[in-house]
Image (cartoon, rainbow, N blue to C red):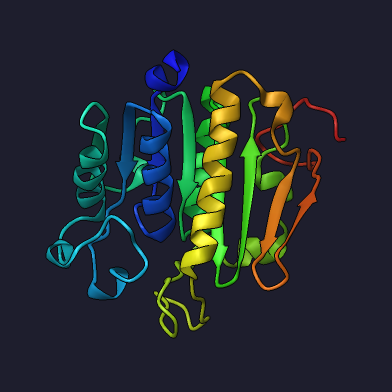
Length: 235
């Protein structure tokens, strides 16, 4: 338990997935959590974010989540960063967790995780579907599993509100059950890492389909030309 108490965790994104991840981290016993998000709470967020309340509307998401999470365990220190992750020093953390809507922001986390040699757990949801990937210092990274379609969507920021997107006409929605499942998968991987059982971590990308109830794992290798693996052989 001392490893869990003493590991500083950084969570990028305090939306629906970030709410669930931070709730799980606190209940699992983590005592040093930092959450970053520049966005503010909207009324439409209340039905899918467990740590938001009516009085949260208009406030910064990270600050609201930090206050609410601290109430779950007074011994847990949850620090809010009401800013973009690009302005955050990530070098001090033991684990990074991505709960982001933006592919470019996820790649930023991926690059810094590789540079500082910090394990990075990336989660994402889309309606009834979701995925989770753990990136280790010596393994394939997030960018290794991306293709040209991902790069075309690099600067799109998706909304979790049905029928609404930001700077893009694509419609995506985030189901509350999906975020709960993906958040649980992410924190489960974090616990494996902290407890020294990386051998039990999922070796690739876990894809969850809430319609069929199936979870499939796609193993990935190093991508030739990936800037984060110069000198490493393709697998």
